[in-house]
Length: 460
Image 1 (spheres, rainbow, N blue to C red):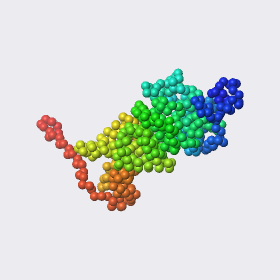
Image 2 (image 1 turned 90 degrees about the horizontal axis):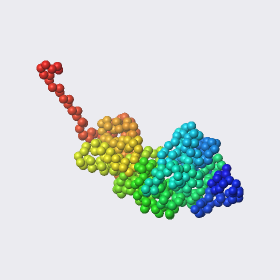
Image 3 (image 1 turned 180 degrees about the vertical axis):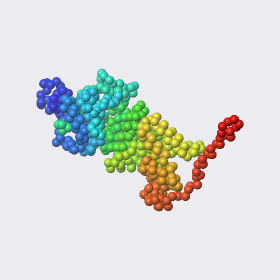
Image 4 (image 1 turned 30 degrees about the vertical axis):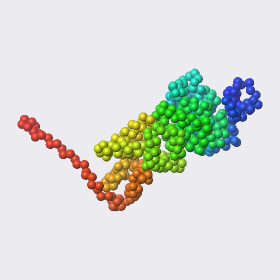
C-alpha cells in the first residue's frame, strides 16, 4: 500500500522499480525532500496512548477506500511518549465524503472546511489534504499575505508542505503502524529543535498566529527555536494586529493552559509578542504588585494542568485582567462613585477595552464578573453577610481568587485565613468568629408617599 502510494506521489505506476522506490525512502536535504517511512520498530509509538475514537475514524475512512492518517501534534506527542490532548485525522476524502462516511458528523468552518466526527463524548477533527493556497480553487489572501480562506485540496505531499513546523508534518498510519516523515520532523524532535517549513517570513505573513504557536510549542515541549525560524518573529510582531480577535483568544487560551504558561510569558516578552495581545498585559507585568499576582496565578494554573487537573479559563482571565479592573475601580471611586457601582463600571470598561484586541467569549466574561464582584463582600465579616456569601455558586472561585490577592500582598493574609477557618467551622464557632458590625448604616426604606386626601366628589 505504501509503495503504491509512493508511486502515485512520485511517478506513474509501472515507471518505477521496487529498488527505485526503496531509494526514495531515504531522507534528502534539498528542496524536494522525499518521504521517510519509519516502521514501528524504529518509532516505538505506544498504541495504548492512541484514542479509540481516532483509530475507529481512520479505520472507517480506510475501509471506505480513502487514505487516513493521524497527523500533526498527536504524532509529535506520541513520539515523545506524551499522551496527546486531542487527535486530528488527515485524509484524501473531501469534507462531503467524510460526512457521508460517518453518520454522527458535521462539516464546520469557513476559512478551513473541516469535519467533526463524534464518538460519544469525544470529537475527532478530520481535514482533507491541503493543496497550495495559490492554486486554482476556493482560496484567498489579503494585502499583507494572510490567508483568509483556504479550501484548496491536494495530495499528502502538498499537505505536508502546508503544515507549520517539521515536528507537526508527520503522518501515522495506525493500520500499518508506520510514520510518514516528509520534512525530517522526527530528526528535529530528537534533536529538540522546532523548525518552520519553508521561508519563515512568508509563512508568518500567511498566518501570523504561527509566531505565537512557535513560542507556545517551544515552551511546552522544551524545543529550541531554530535560528532562521526565530529570527523574523520580533520584526513581524505587528502582523498580529491583523488577526481576528477570536483566533487570538483561542491561541492565547492554549498558551496559558499548556501547563507551561510561565515559560510562555517569558518567551512572549523576549520576542516582543506580548504587547497588545491582552489589554495592557505589558503594563500589568511591569507593576510590581500586579506581576507577582499574575505569576502566582499562572504558577497555580501550571501546577493544576501538569497534575492532570482542569483549570477554568474564566478564573485565569479574571486574574490576568484584575489589576486593570482594580485601577479603574479606584479611579471611579476618586471621582465620587459609590463602592459597588464603581466596581461594576470598572468591570465593564476593562471588558470593553479587552474586546478591541481579543474577544473573550461571553460564557467566560460572565463568570469573571461574578468573581470580581464577590471581592468586596469578602471584607464584610459581620452579621449575615458571610453566611450568604458561602451559598454563592461561585464562592469557591471567588475564595481562591481572594487567596491569590492575599498571597501577592494586595490584602492582609489574615483575611484569607479567616475565610478558610469560617468555611470549615461549626455553627457555634462561626458565630463567635463574626466581627462586630462595621458601623455601616443599613439602607433605610423610603417612606411610601401618602395618597392625597380625597376631595369633594371623588372617591377615596
